[in-house]
Length: 135
Length: 304
Image 1 (cartoon, helix red, strand yellow):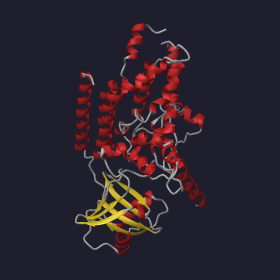
Image 2: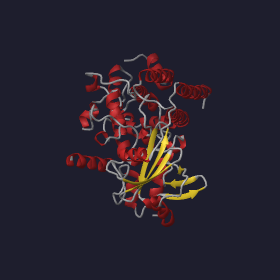
Image 3: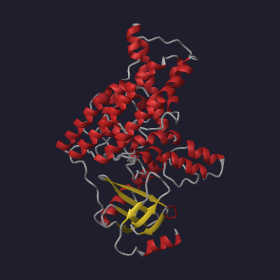
Image 4: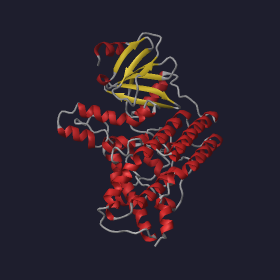
């Protein structure tokens, strides 16, 4: 890389930082929340037309949700900035563990990192069964 | 003919780098207009990841761009014609480059190997000028540049093709906005914000449409044009939206997905399908492809 290219790169990096700061200062930092089970249902059904949500486990901070669809698949929803990113997958493709931090649901896709769902109560029966049997 | 001085200046013109200050100024301007008017949307985290992808693309370009240019220069030795730097050849090169871009872009959506590189540009759920800068890091290594080889083999000087490729990239920046509606007669010929919103949308009716770079005529010619509708506002992103703003996850997720699928393939047919089939292809058809999503949508509409 030449000196000129290096300077261009440094300038670009500074511009990136400046733009992010400006976006932040302008108030573009709203975080989407799933305030209720209904919010989670709506988000999932909007991404998966025709899907029927049969059960929802909601994160206590409203930043994620894990749901069971009527057809047996699982749906994962997480706050991504001011949007919700939803994934659905056959139950067998989702690994769910109970950890100290909450439920951790993992998909075999690095584009959707493990989802943490903080819960106060015990998981519902369908989720207990899922964790025990894996499907 | 073009004078040797002008030819040399055009051949060495790095139009994309020159345009960067303009990109920055327009992103700031758009953010301010969005803040004031409430039209369009921005999110700082989303824009940060888009901008980091753009920055990474520049770094990779500086490291590998020379190799791509070298490949074109080597193959230029086997050209069919000696096409000079002249106004007529530059006009031809503009159309040729735009056609090459159309086919690159179309195949980048229809074949998973190229999609793995191009998907990056579509991973934002927003559509604004920062989205335009969300660019791939793996275009050179995935051989995306082969789509421009026919121009080199025909005899267009690689620097001329590179010039129009840069112009196309700069042109495509400003169409990533929700602030501009429809542009009258320009919509017939040019790729516009409206046409490109359709391209970035995941609404079933809009999938796999409007691959144009500068001119929308190619989509009209090859049957991939879809007009934006007021009763079906575009929803942006990809079918399986990402759950991370991490640039490395964004850059490599589809490549890792290909690797996982290929590792689990049971025969060579499945390997080929996973690598070069349509994105979402699977042996049992259980995953979503554009075609299956469109068919499901058409069935739902027919049932209603």
